[in-house]
Image (tube, rainbow, N blue to C red; front, side, top):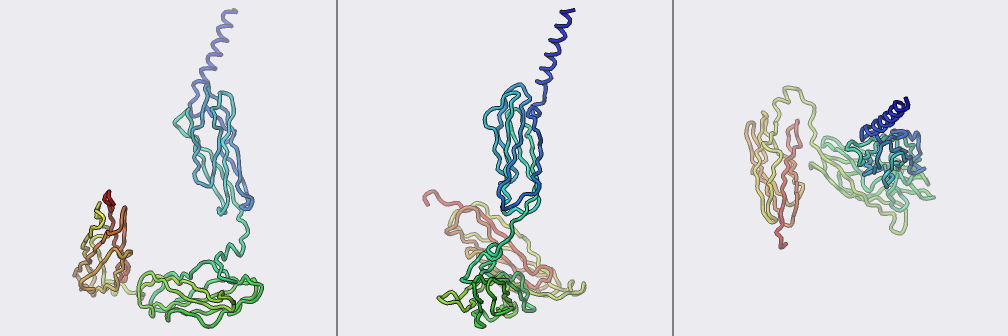
Length: 368
C-alpha cells in the first residue's frame, strides 16, 4: 500500500512538472493584463505611464529581447535582466500626448528568447487637447502683427474670374494697429481690409483678390506683396508671399461638345534612363497625340528643374495627329537618384494638366 501511494505521488509530481514543461513557449510569460485603458488624459499633463507586470510560469529564465512600439509617441522600457521561473518582470508603456488630441490605440510588440511568436500588448485612451493660445493660432510675428503663415496661399485660381480669400491676423499690441491704404503688389493682386484699424489684442481680416486672367499664366505662382502699418522704426513695412496655382477654366459642356473637344494622349508617362554618368546629356522623345475632334493647343510646357529642357516644334496638334516632345536632361553637377517632371498644359477640357516623369541614377567617377 505504501509503495503504491508513493508511486502515485511521484507520478503526480512528475505529471505536474511535465505539464509545466509542456506549456507553449509563447505562453510562459503571463501578464496581469494585456490591454490598458488610460481613459481621458490631458495634453497639458505630459506623458502618461503604465507598467504591464508579468510572471515567468516556465521552467527556465526568460529574457525580453526587444519591445517595439507602434509609433514613436510610445516609449517602452522593460526588465533587462533574465527573469527566473516564478519571478516577475515589467514592461512600461509611456504615451506622449503632445500635439496628439483625440482617441489613440497603440501596440507594444514584445519578442523574447523563449519563442519566435511575439506578444502583443495594447494601450488606448483619449487625449484632451490643451487650450489653444494666440501664439498657437498666429505663430508668425511681424512687429505688432501676428499671422498664421509667412505667406497667403490662394489655392486653385481659374482664369475666368478673380478669386478672393480671407486671412485672419492678430494685433498683439496694447494700442490699435492701422493698415495704410497704400500697398505694393502686382496689378493682378489687390488687397483690402475688413477694417483698416484693428483694436488692441484683437483679430482682423485681410482680403486678398487674385485675378487669374490678368496674370495670364498657368501652374504654380509665387508673388510678393508689401503691406504698411502705422508702426515706427521700420516695423511698419511687412512683406508677404502670395501663392497660387493657376488653371484654365472650361465651362460645362454637353456630351456632344465634349466629344468634339481636343483630347491629349501621351504615349509614355514615365521613362527611366537607368544608370548614367555625371555630365551625360540624356535625350528622350515623347509622342503627344490629339485623339479629339478639334485642334489641340499646348498652352505651356513647364519643367520642375532647369536641368531638364522640353520643347516642341509646334504647339498645335490637329485632330488625329501627333507631335513630338523633345526632352533633354543635363546631368552636370548632379548625383544619385534623380526624378524630374514635365507638366503639359493644354486646352483638353478633360485633362488640361498632364505630367511626364523622367528618372535616372547618376554615378560620379571615383576621382570626383
